[in-house]
Amino acid sequence: MTLGVDEIPLARPVLGEAEEAAVVAVLRSGQLSLGPCVPAFEEAFAARLGVAHACAVSSGTAGLHLALRAAGVTDGDEVVTSPFSFVASANAVVFERARPVFADIDARTLNLDPAAAAAAVTERTTAVLPVHIFGYPADLPAFERLGLPIVEDACEALGAVHGDGVAVGARGHSAAFGFYANKQLTTGEGGMVTTGDAAVKARIDSERNQGRAPDMGWLDHDRLGFNYRLSDIASAIGLAQLGRLDAMLAGRARAAALYRAALADIEGLGLPCEDAGGDRRGWFVFVVQLPRDTDRDETIRALRALGIQSKPYLPAIHLMTYYREVFGHRPGEFPVCEDVAARSVALPFFPELREGQVARVAAALREVLGR
Ligand SMILES: Cc1ncc(COP(=O)(O)O)c(C=O)c1O
Image 1 (tube, rainbow, N blue to C red):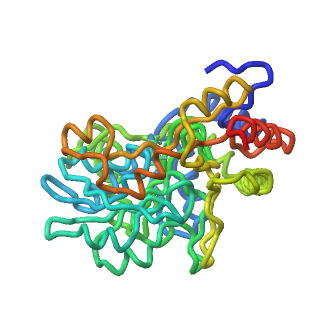
Image 2: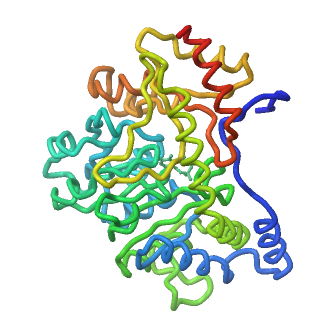
């Protein structure tokens, strides 16, 4: 999308000399893939989170797919998950010919509701896949009490921390992070699976590389695998981004605080929930819920006319054409999710968003909503 002169974009990565130098060093080394930057990025990422292992992969989706395989999810199994997520979290279940079984979300956190998830468990359930939506920690202790394998979708949650002080992704389950360009940390495209289990690390490392075991020779493979590798170029960018992660997270938190103050008095507008119970959000997007009597598409068009990008975020997965057609879903199944999904709008949000830009967005929203 081309930007007008004064247009405020939805997202903008922070990239600078460190990333440039890192890429140039890899190009000069001649080793563009399967080189030293991949384990270096994995080790630094794992150390940052306080988890034993990390496996770099080509996307968050690839990470979810390999993590589900490592959890043993296969043909005909059921995986309980959230319908309020990016479609990849459910798609990864379908990749393995298993069925995503949706359960409704908690109206405050917008994460999978543990009670609804428990009610959706059957004898075919092989895993639970909570999503830390918009960077807010899902209630992992509650899901852990279900006693089932857990795969976490942490694609939006780098920097988030659970109430007990453990970083999101560091509880020992497999957790997939995503590094697409709008994320807290980006490698353009990319992802990382964290895990506390050395056997899971070995399996994912093999399956991301066509099923090759570490001690096997070139072009010898002992299992089915994929090409889900992250290149050295991308890993070098990731390492440079890790060096500025604290500053980038602080920039997002600052922008969120500015929005909260600027939007607080718009009647009927829902804001992202505040941190509670010691849980800390890793800020990713700033999503508001429009008042119930508002035409969302018209609001987005009107904001655009005022030079402000925004988008509906997120649509309910079960109501997407593919999920309706293949799994027979219909409106009304998950009322909390459907209400939230129909009213959600993501506003411009990135670490370097300036106070004046936040004020412009707030004034435009007030004008468009007539409040
Ligand atoms: C919640 C969630 N899950 C999965 C993904 C997939 O990540 P990727 O785009 O890196 O494959 C994303 C990223 O957009 C996401 O936001």
